Image (cartoon, rainbow, N blue to C red; front, side):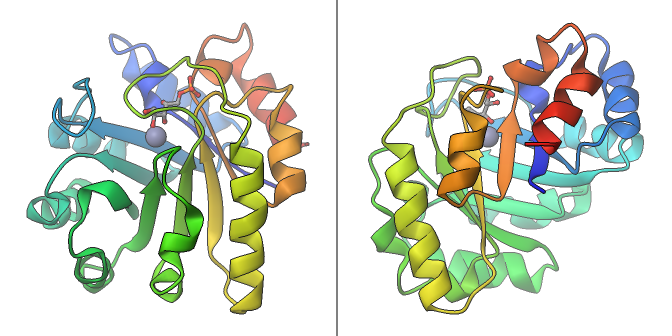
Length: 215
Ligand code: DX5
Ligand code: ZN
């Protein structure tokens, strides 16, 4: 069964407590938390204080997706705020291996996100240090965008690399995931589905999460 990670970005920011309670009740596995700095991506979302409060309200694994430059400056602070998984962008890390060592040594699971234009083979020499590869299926920065179809081929190639190396790295798909296209990503080899608009704009988010989980 896929891991379902609803994204806070599409939640009701005036009623986060209500959305946390809804998620706690649902079959969601992780809570996907998108941090944007207005520099790596052309948008600013939320940061440490919000995550600190989410941590207190959620029973789910906190899957923090950093869309920021110089993530090494904040890794410890995100651990303290409650991150279980810390994902940094390949494109934002000059010393990716060092960043992954830092995240591991702080006691978090390591994640690396790839923008749509970044080939998966660039991870070949560092894959054994990664718990989660987040394949961006939209250009990062905004919720509610259209899924980029080339992602399916990237999933297949990455899955092959993971199996060839006998690893258990999770493949997470982030952006434009819907009830219509999610199955094709799972068939290609994805393990984790991030869903913002699909969950929070649905009339019945709990049922939508259950439907994604049942795919
Ligand atoms: C985009 C974020 C996504 C976003 C997905 O930069 O990384 O996690 O919340 O939202 P949807 O599912 O609406 O495309
Ligand atoms: Zn994300």
